[in-house]
Image (cartoon, rainbow, N blue to C red):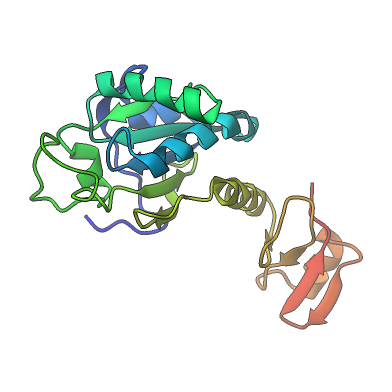
Length: 217
């Protein structure tokens, strides 16, 4: 199955460091971030998991859960978590999926369907298992990103995108390049000038198709 923005996020059951879950039930009625790793005890991912552990309270403020995935067994994740806390200064409190049969990695198009179990696999074999998905309360995929092995992911950017998506889901606006929470936003073209006067009094017209206003809410 080819996944695209607004595809339904494939549901699955899995073992995690916090017990067995049904993914859609675990998400509940909030947002979710699923981010994957090619192998436990890998250097770049160690920094990433630690950073996400530090950011978790910010995601929680936005009604967004975090869940990680690695193809190694859940038991390995616990030992890796000790290293992460020791080296990065943050304890991993969000669940980590043990995807030993590669079921979730295949569901989310991270690995080809003909790949087999995790035994004997290296991080380089699993290079494409470095993805990030943001999933909305409607269980639809809102963002997909896949990074190369040697480049650490920018999770501040993931948080920024979440802010944008939550804002634009509630108001008839879009966010411009490099937008940050609290900055001016763009009124969507679907909003007529008359409607904009009611919704966004005092808005600025730069071009007929480019109108800006203070961030609503």
